[in-house]
Every structure is written in C-alpha cells, then in structure tokens.
Length: 285
Image 1 (spheres, rainbow, N blue to C red):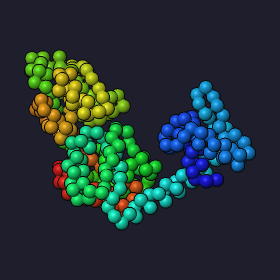
Image 2: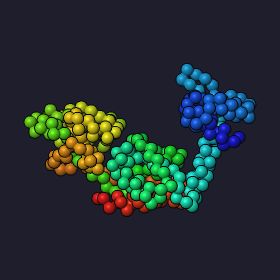
Image 3: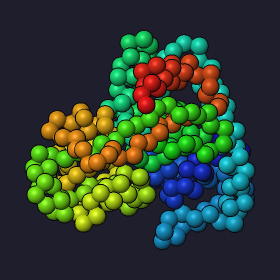
Image 4: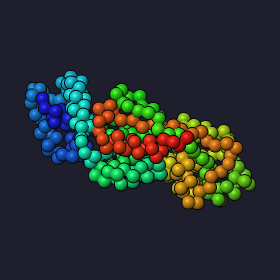
C-alpha cells in the first residue's frame, strides 16, 4: 500500500466524492478512480459504496481507516521535518490568521520580511476558522485563543486593544436616542466573544442590525451607518470615516497567540517571521 494511494483514499473519505477529492488534491477525476481501484484490488473487495449522499465506506474500507490515518501522520511528520531543514531563507510560508489581522497588523511585518529575505513568499490563508497545524493547513497561525492541539509550540505574542466605533450619523442618533442605534456583532457562533457581552451591557435596549464573521465587513457596515461596532483598534483607527467613541470604558482586549508545529522549529523562514513579529508587535500592551 503506497502513501500516494492512501492519500487519495483519505481525500475521498473526507470529501464524499471522487470529483471533490480530485479538486482538493489537484489531480484528475480518472486518476482518483484508478488509484482507488488499485487499493480495492489489493484488498480484494470494495472500499466505498455509492449512496444518495455520496460515497460511504464499506466494512472493508472502515477497517483500514485507522491504518491510513497513521500512515498520513507519519508522512506529514516527514514532510514537516524536511520543510524545517532548509538552509536558505526561501520558499512559501503559509500563515493562518484573521483577514483584519493580516491586513492591519501583520502587513508591516510582511514588508520587513520581504526587505530582509526577498526569496521568502508569505501566503496568507485568511479566515475565522482555526487552521490545523498538524495537517500543514498552514505553517504558522496567529489567533485569539491558545492552541490545545498536541505538539504545538506556542506563546502569547501581544495584547490586542479594541474600541467602540460609529459613523458621524450613528453618533448623532446615539446622542438623541441611544435605543435607536443598531449594534453590529460577530455571528451566533462567536456570540460568546467578550465584546458582544460588553456592547449588550452598555446598550441593553438597542437591537442587533448586522452580524458577520469578518471584522473588516463589520467595519464597512459601521462606516455606512448600520450601527455601532466593537473593532480591533488597528482596523477601526485605520478606517477613514469611523470615529472611536468613549462609552465609559474600553471594550475588553484579547491576547494574540502564535503557534506552529514542533517539527517546523528548524524552518528558518518561519523563525524569521516570528522574530520580526516579536520585534515589531510584542511590545504592544
């Protein structure tokens, strides 16, 4: 059983179809079918069966999942270690973080990295979902919560301060009738964020008018008068037309954590980015 075939088997298992597995792996649909057929010939029986919901495992397929995932972990470990042994500072460095953090906090770090090491290419995988460092979704991640996965090297990088923002028209409405002002929040999945509770406490009669997982989208809706929004100060202060409001105290801040898999601790380009981030950002309190 070859790793290349097992990799395809796992992609089909996780996607539920040959076509989606092919897209994720960057190979052709027929290639996926051929490699699954090779595995089935070796097993002497089918590994998947077709249903109205897509491909599902047979008993034979289910019996090899644990072994396939163990092989995957071994292959990924080898890949991480090889990636960590580059002597020259060059190549792509995949970075996972929120869009606003990349654009308004890390952008100067990326520019300094380019100045010092022009052969290193930062590739930002922006989004609110947490990246899987063990599977090499990204090489390094910046996020608001500590890492709980095993084998992750992590530390607190900085303290991020937040502010309450509104457009000039929103502020005028708030002065006349605070209850008439709308509130812009994260979506329901992030309703536990401390800034949500902080806003609801200060504006108990105001209604939610907009929500988004993207802080950048929140900032734009706030600018257009949709309501008040709590935003990271690097984003809110840099958005022309938004005004920071004194509401009897500042919204709660959040710690920013940086982490990477321990197998990548020798990756020079990763260390270079983290050292620059420390030098340029870690003094922020």
